Structures are given as structure tokens and as C-alpha cells.
Image 1 (cartoon, rainbow, N blue to C red):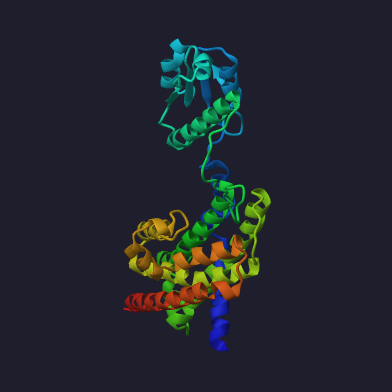
Image 2: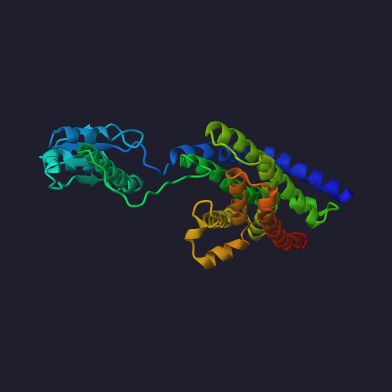
Length: 372
């Protein structure tokens, strides 16, 4: 009971210390507000509002029909362009696509001579260039077939049903992904910064004269950092993702909070372990950020695990972030319950125990060196 009371009071001290750190508070507020909403609304992978100009050298009903088919939200209203201005428009980045419709285009189509449409693309806009090219080919083929009153026979019809995100809205995925990434980043930073701050402020010696064991000091830093991150992450899920972005959450938010709390045990321990290797806050940053980037990129949050080599997929089973991404997506997108995600929960707890043991060993060595 005395040990539990010491852990609780020491953890409360950590929370008060964090509240007085304006820079850290600002980072937390930014990470769970704009850093979630901004990328989800701004970083779109689908074709949207692409600029396009049309060089209409035919001026026929079919060429007008092709121009009118370039509709929002994929394209901005098509701008008429003279053929002599084509190169200058692309060089000045006034448009991404220029569709050149040749003379006698409609007449050649009606005569069955298969005329060629020329599409000029500014490929410096890589994302839109690749997708827009495919969109324009499809639009042109459909409009010509409709104009001629016939359709191309297809031996096989593919019907696609998108589950969990039926409109394929990129913001749904990006909002959840940003929360997962920011929880990982701040778990490492908050817990590690608490240890480095003790050393830099000279308060580590104060802890040494108190009747506290290293495990109690570590547990206090773990639970206080975890409480702050899980609480703020849940608020971000409610107000930023569900509120501002309008993303529906299919599963249980309390179950997601429970899983996040278990995940914090691993990440905060990792943060403390890295802090024991650093002598100052800049050194800790040089260790923490590469570690976060590797964990995040290889977790499946940004890059699908199926696209990675088999050996790397197997290696990432030792990463708690891999399992966190698995059960977070299962709960929030697919509505999975505890009976589905408990293996991932168990893996996170097991890896967390290993991380805590390694961090505790290093932390004891740090305290012993400070006493010496």
C-alpha cells in the first residue's frame, strides 16, 4: 500500500510538472488537433480539382461533349486554349493537363478511322498526373461510345464493394492514422523527456534521497504519461476525427482506450530506455525521432504490411506498434470486439514487459551512476 501511494503521488508530480512545461503542452495540443485535421483534409491521394485546358481544333458536337464531360470534383472547369499557347501554359504551370482534340475528329470517328486524342501532362504533379491520365482515358472512351450509340462488350463484369469506407474517402484513413502516429510519438517523447528533465534540472538527486525504488519511479512516469496521452488521444478521436472530419467510429471507444493504455506500457518504457542512453534533451531527440519514424513506417499505418518482404513482416511482429495498428484499425473501422483483438492485446502486453524490464535495468544503472 505504501508503495502504491508513492507511485500515485510521484505520478501526480509528473503531471503537474508537465502542466508547467508550456512547450510540451503546446506540442500535445498541436499533435492531437491540427496535426490530425490538417493532413486528413489536405493530403488527398485521389484525383480532385485538377486543372485542365482543352485545345479544340475540331469545334464539333463531339469535341464539345468531351469538354463538357470534364466535371467536378475531379477536374476544375476546362479552360479553352489556343494550340500556340500550349507549351507556354505547361511551362508556366497554369494547368496540369491539356487535351488536344485534332481537326476533323468527329468526322474521323464517324468514319471509323480511329483518330488520336493527344493529352499533355505536367508530370511534376505526380499524384494527379498518374490518376488523371487514367480518368481522362476512361471519360474519352465512354463519351465516344455514347456518341456513336454503342458500348464496348465486356466478357466479364467486375462489381466492387468497398467495406468500412464505402466512398473511399482518404480523410477517414488519414485521421485515424494521424492519431495512432501521434500517440506513438508522444508516448516516447513524454516519458523520455521526464527522465532527461530530471537530470538537467538536478532533481534526479532529490529522488535518490527519497525512500523510493527505481521500479516505483519508473512506474510513476509510465502511468502519468500514459494517462495524459490516452485522455488527450480520446478527446482527439471524439472532437477532431468524429467531429471535425465526420469519420464514423464503428467499434467501442472504451476498448480502444484500453488497448491504447496497454500500448503505452511499451512505448513509455521505450522512451525511458532511450532517455537513459542520452545525456541531454538534444541527444534524446536524435534517438527518439529515428526510432519513432522506423516504428511508424513499418507498422502498417502508412505502408501496407503485405507490400513488405516476408522477413520484414516477421521481424515487425516484435514491434508493439505493429500490433497496435492492427487492433486499432480492427476496433475503429471494423467494429471488432475483445474476442477478436485479444491476441494483439496479449502481444502488446508481452512486448511491453520486455521493454519495461530493459528500461528498468538501464534506469537502475543511471541512478547508480548518479549516486556514485
